[in-house]
Length: 368
Image (cartoon, rainbow, N blue to C red; front, side):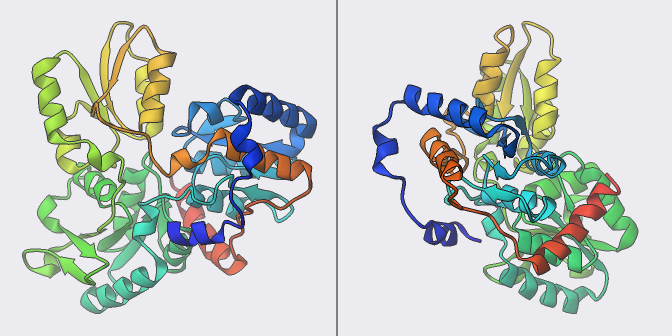
């Protein structure tokens, strides 16, 4: 579902009453409802969520981790997922039919996930299969729609996370000669390069022009990268790094692998969100860090580790706009709807899509 579709799917706008309440009143009411519902309510919160929301999370983590924890919690009747749409979809796929997954604001999408829709993907697969025959295995980053996960599962592929991408790409090459990596070209490129595949063996598929972007003999291509990206991580640049190397050469630079190849290459460290958090947690007091990832998380790390000097790699960064859709008023509205017995913004993945998507997820979970 695209961001536009999600906006259309939103049945109503935030009631005025939530716009007139103070933060203190809303926070008190959320705590009250959490106590009232007890184990029947489960609130997973992604690392990139606002502080006003993450304080109420029962668990925090990355997208797949939160979906798995939701699936493990069989007591909860309502799972209020504080993240974005594709994450709530994965939670719905993995949880039971008796459980309801709720997204507090349907506008909380992911621009990266929206860069690969199922119609584009099926067209690309048809054209690429005509070019390369049965030599391609599709992989999709978990930051993708349920429909894309289902497509990959149906065609023998698997999902990947930023933590296990190397293991999954290695597995894919043990199965087929080539891979199609959706929807984030940067994670695909960085992972393949780290595994020893040269850049001149990688091509980019443009889903809007329906063409392969490659300057050379197409038979040499081993990695087919979907032309997609994270709008947040693509804003970290070489200029940011060069300026920091001059102004503060003692600083360690750590970035997420959703950043461009040249940014990852010139950084000191690169890894998943969990890797970044662990690296900062275990760093020596007094050490200095410039972090290239989402701003809400960077601010949280700054506050949590005052004994370390932490800044954002890009001083002009703002939080992920779609992640920021989940705010305190929408969280409270969703919880009060549960108390009233109202089905509020449920995320429901059709069974035929869920079945194929589970194939892709399970292939990953069995190997990584």
